[in-house]
Structures are given as structure tokens and as C-alpha cells.
Length: 307
Image 1 (cartoon, helix red, strand yellow):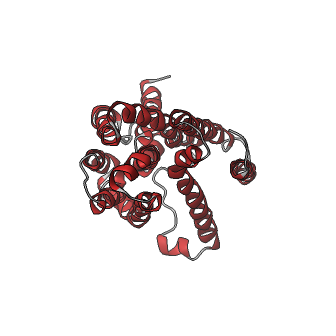
Image 2 (spheres, helix red, strand yellow):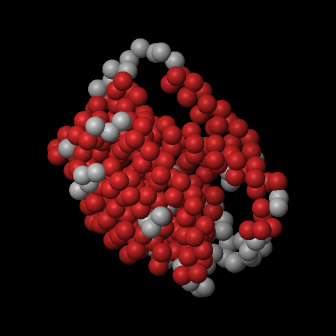
Image 3 (cartoon, helix red, strand yellow):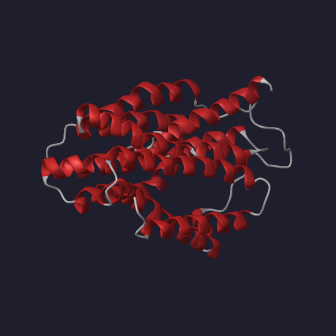
């Protein structure tokens, strides 16, 4: 493997770690761990606490096109670096909140001014380095969200046990500043012309797709968009409530965090497997298989099984 090949796979690993510290993993997984103490200290209902996640996701949906435009204009690195700093600030400031509006405002900040820390910037960098095995590279990096869902519950529970819910947010902010930011500063760069992949000459570098207006006139755009809306509704609706739901069924806090971590490990492994499979097989059949397995898991969770 040449230096360019090593560099490209190093960027995939850095992207994997960076995505694992994004708003999806940090914002969603931590709130489920902290919700019981938040409710006890402030008297907020579970609905009020989880509303912060809804606000964050709505803001993310509204601001992602803007983030994409900024990435196209200024490059992924110039958007990603300040976004990581802003996400760390929003996360750390959550440890100082004393009112509900502050809590909501900071989660809104994660979905607006820190929206550049989502996977889009990392994927832009990866696609500049890969043509061949691009699906595998994207699958590995994209599994970062699952990796975050695997370790954030355990890390958050350890921080909670050590110093309460405020320590959860201080600790996560520290990870962003001491781990994510240095990795991005050192390792995230789009491929220069001499580093760009040349393993498939038939793929046109920099080839542009349809404009937004043209894409929106195609049925495929709306079908795919609807699929992602439903997926996000189910996934991001479940994750913040998974630990409290398990605790309601008599599971201890530590065991609930462990089960939430298993959820993340499965997501991590699934993304890796799917990334490999889409390079080999029909993506539609793969989607049907894994969506069916997800539906089966949700159905089992709804059953009154003993704990």
C-alpha cells in the first residue's frame, strides 16, 4: 500500500472516530442516561426532556442544506473544525444550565451552528480519496454513529456515577476538545489532484449530479426522502428513551446502559457489514433484509418479556 493508500484509510478511521462524537451519538445517547437526574433536579417531565432531541433534529434537518452549501463553497475542513469547537461549547455549557430554555437552546445549537459536525463533511472528504471500494470506506466511516451509540452510554453512565448529570456533559465536551478536534486538525483533508483516486478511470472526478430542483422533480427523490424520514423518526425516537424504558421495566441503570451499548455495537457491526455488501449485491435487497430485522427487533422490544 502506497502512502496515498495509507493516508486514505487513515482518513476513514479518523472519520469513523469523528462521526462517533457527533451530535447524533453525543446528544441522543447522553440524554437518556441523564434524564432521571434531570427530572429529579428540575422537575421536568420525560416528554419535556426528550423534546430537546426533537428540537435538535428539526434544526439539523433545516440546517443540513446550508451546511452542505458551506462545505461545497469553503471545503469540508474549514466547516468541520469550527463546528467541532462549537459542538464542544454547546455540550459543555449544558453542564451549567439552570433553566429549561437554556437546555433547549443548547440542544438547538447542536442542530444549527454545530450542524457541520454531522457526517456530511467527513463523507465529502472520503469520496475525494476513494473510487474503488468507496462503498466499504463510506460504510466503515458511517458506522461511527453506531460506535458512538456503543460507547457513549457506558461513558455517560460512568461520568454520571462519578459526578452527576453535569459531569456527563463536561466529560463529553472534553472528548470533543481533546480527541476529536486534534484528529480533525491533523488528519482531515480533501485529496489534492495528485492524491485523487485513479483506480477506476471510467469514473469522472468531480462529476456533478442533478441540481436540487431537477432532483426534486423525480419520484425517486421523494421515495428515498420518505424512507429516511421514517428511519429517522423510529431510530432517533427510540434511542433517547431506550434507557428510561428499560429502567421502567426494572432494569438497573448500569444494565440499561449496557443494553443501550449493545444496541450501538449492533449498529456499528451492521454498518460495516452493509458497507461491504452494497459493493457486492443489490442494495435494494440488502435494505429489505436489514429493515425487516430492525422491525423484528422493535416488535420484540414491545413484548412483555421478563427481565
